[in-house]
Image (cartoon, rainbow, N blue to C red; front, side, top):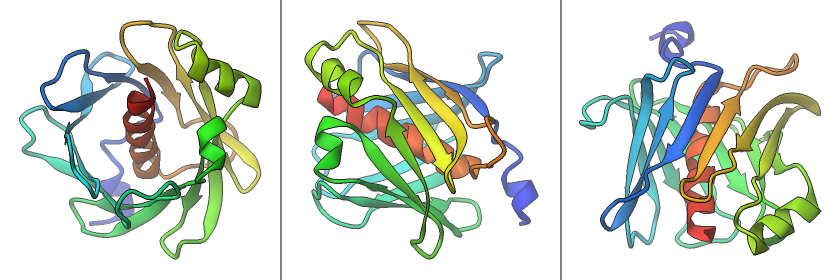
Length: 194
């Protein structure tokens, strides 16, 4: 399967939402700008080593991505992202450990674990305030090689965690599979902090 064929179902804009109610776990949905379901994730609670499958359907029949933690419960965890169709590694996402306690920051790694970009909250002050006052929305900026490549902006909603996602900003281009994986990880981590 060629890269262009593998990337066909991926877009540059999404609305990502965490489900309001789930029993023993959490669920996330990414919608296209037209409101159609693009991706679905259902995570089980109480797993020591995270393993997440991203599906294109709620019946969980069509796996698109696999995200797997390399370590068990590590503040600087690295998550490998694999294309579920081809089995090829797409890259990885590494949380920047103790830095992320006060201000979320992730490294975007290529298939050889070389950092090619970052995902970072826009402001340290806003990051700290958002942890104290849950109603303050967060914004994450995506940079690749020092160039702005996109943004993930939390919507103001006290009842449901939701993001407006744009991977199509700037001249740098993020592999949308890594982008989708990053949104899933932010929904997962932020969901635990709330």
